[in-house]
Image 1 (cartoon, rainbow, N blue to C red):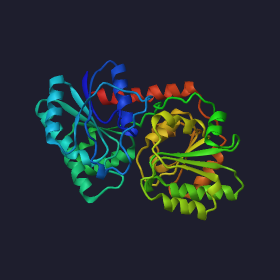
Image 2: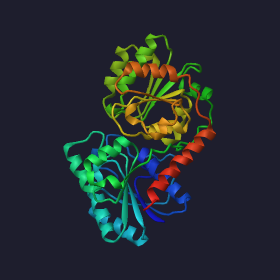
Image 3: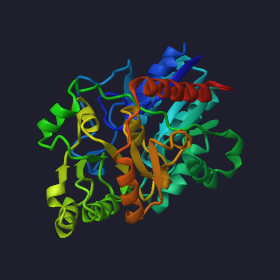
Image 4: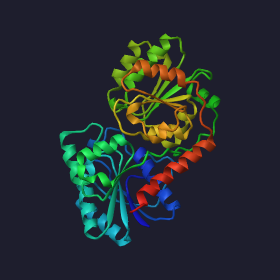
Length: 373
């Protein structure tokens, strides 16, 4: 098939960019002819809470792409439609995660539909994590134009169908594939612990990614306090850019008496460094209070790390690995602490097991997108 894929790729950073890049490569490996269209500009600076939305790490995978789209520039929408029609694809695949793109995507899909080109949305989030009243109307207006939808959890399917009840037959659930995005560091755990100034034998748990309220770091700090009170000498590494006030977390850490047990790396972790954090850790923890799926959990799985996560981000792949992934209710520090205590001694998956899961999960996604067009 000839397919057009629209979404962020290198040098844009974050999980959606990794997802789009890997999907483009897997579609090509499956024998499809791919046109990739990315963004000339993704957001205005005032809308993006981070320091930058780009990561120029040399290790990042790249795909051929046309950087055409700007969200508030209709001339770039027209240019995008023209480029797609010149390519003559059978279907256009669009990543959807924020309603900021609703105007552009609504225009593009409508123009393509008039020229017989079908469209599929890969819905990472029906609504933004911090949704406003207007987001529902914008999402409905843009998403309603599509022919097909790929979502990654039953929970996200329910959200989408609440918005678009007539689209039930057009929605397919495909669990979020696992990632093998970050290039291994080439160092063993002992060397990495020395580099980060961590004791070689002390168990290390990792919280990784942008720090936002819905990710439940507060609950993890409470759980960590419980563990220390039980005599568990566990280290917590918090690695990622804080998108809210870091001082409230620093104060809580101090109040709980956890300062000497916690290391904070308040910065965006570039791809060239990211693997080191997973490779030096014994356990990954995702104490999310609200979400539908998580790319960083699938990144941890790609490193074979044991995981503790809350039930708000569970999908079919996670359920297939009950020994690797311990699931607890959200907003419950006591049960979170008990799961961490249990999982901290679980052995990681070996590389052969990970490779099998990686290939299978992406093949399933490619087939679901392309079957029946």
